[in-house]
Amino acid sequence: MKSLKKQRRIQVIFAATAALIVATGLIGYGFSDGINLYRSPSQVSEAPPDPDEFFQLGGLVVEGSIVNGTGVAFDFVLTDGAVEIPVSYVGQTPRPDLFGEGQGTIAKGWYRDGRFEAREILAKHDETYMPREVIETLKATGHYKDPES
Image (cartoon, rainbow, N blue to C red; front, top):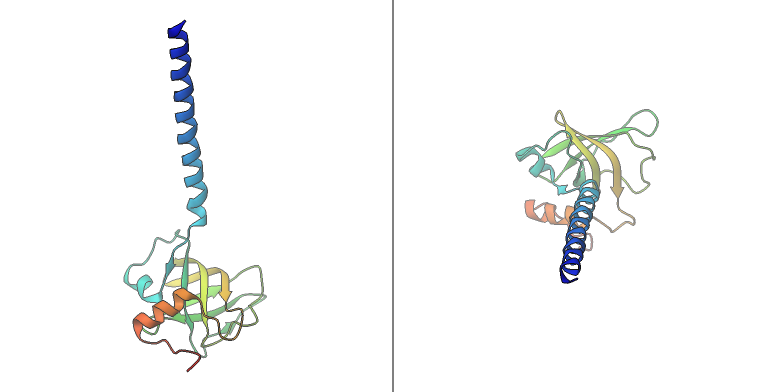
C-alpha cells in the first residue's frame, strides 16, 4: 500500500513540475512580444538593432522636419541633441493633435536601412508633458530645457 501512495505522490510532483515549466514558458513567450525597449537616437546610431527588433525611439521632433504624406502617413526627424534619425510613420491613426516640431515624442517600430519605421506615435497629452525617457536622454546630452523656466 505504501509503494502505491509513494508512486502516486511522485506522479503528482512530476505533473506539477511539468505544468509549472509549461506555464513559465508560455508567460515568457507572451511577454516577449510585449516588451519593447526604449532607445535614444544616439544609442541607435552607436549600436543599430536588428531590423526585426521592435522597440521605442524617443527624442525631440526637429524643427521643419515634418513632411505630410498620403493619408495618415508622414515623415519627421527625431533627435536627442546629438544624433538625428529620420522617421516614417504609416499607421492606423492620424497624427496626434499635440504632436509637433520641437516637442518630445516616442515612436514605436523598427529601424531598417538607416530609417525608423514607426507603427505608433506617442505624443504629449498636454502642453507641459514630456515622456520621462526623453527628459532623461536630453539631460544626458545637455539639451534639456525646463518648461517652467
